Image (cartoon, rainbow, N blue to C red; front, side, top):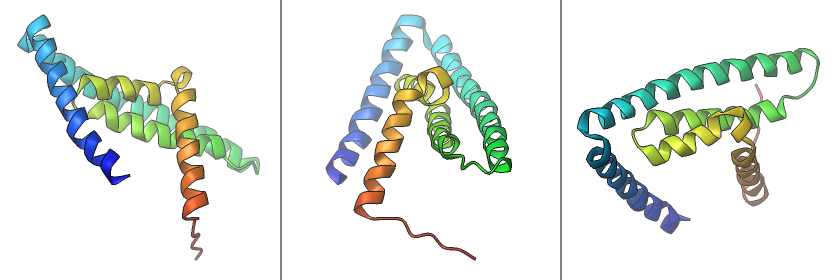
Length: 130
């Protein structure tokens, strides 16, 4: 696990820098910088919109006595997608859109479910109650 994390921390920023250089050479400096800023603004807006929508859906289910399991997993996807869009980088923006946009979220949702299942089976969960 640590080797993969180290590899990601080296490879992903290198790819992002390569994309910045490519975009700068292709479109010019100013359009590239504006596109990076615009993607951060769009990411924050989408995070707020989708997060608010999920909160209302979860509250509706809770009011009816139904556990909001799908909304919780979607909430994790929205948070991850928002973070990815706020960070500068074109690759992270594309990944973030897959996590944020409801029609594209089914793939990332399955990944999040698999990660949660893996963590629960290996380490278990401890629930603290007041």
